[in-house]
Length: 253
Image (tube, rainbow, N blue to C red; front, side, top):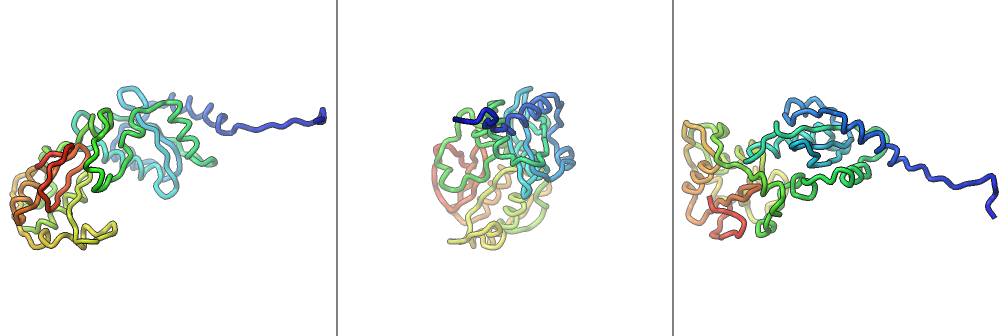
């Protein structure tokens, strides 16, 4: 029989943390999702909430490699050039976590707040070529707040350039994914710079003086390229490939 002088006891550190963390987060006003505000955060491990229309819509975590500043600045970009929403419509609340790993805290916060944007595609990267035949969830982030390719932008410098240079400039400046065809078997994060399809690097065009929308820029590039190229708009991104293809969930530009 157990000794009368002995018990087993498991200290629930996670519950203790959440009992202190949740009230502190709820009491915060939060800060607007601007590049200026997120740039002032430490690039440290932690958790954060994104609040939209007075409700927590997203719970995220960070680690030492991609800390709070990096992750939240990335989310600011995600909210830019969107229909029905802008970064200043959203506020963030962030907490640096010094001791415990953020992973379990994140999952517990998701259970507590039940945020709508978790699992909706908000935190996703480029879904890749094969996912372009898949519909976005009707209540997903991109479907509710599609990218806006009709904003006049001063991204491209007026004057002569190649189709490839114009695409690289757009890709690196836009807050959403622009993907275009590369050489066969081209791989690596910088392949879009060094290994484009030959048509893109050999085709010249002239950027006009007035600001261009992404729709106008893609149409100019397609008109300049040899026959057979197609630009397609999706609610989350834009692609340019040498193809003649109808997408169930995309629209030709």
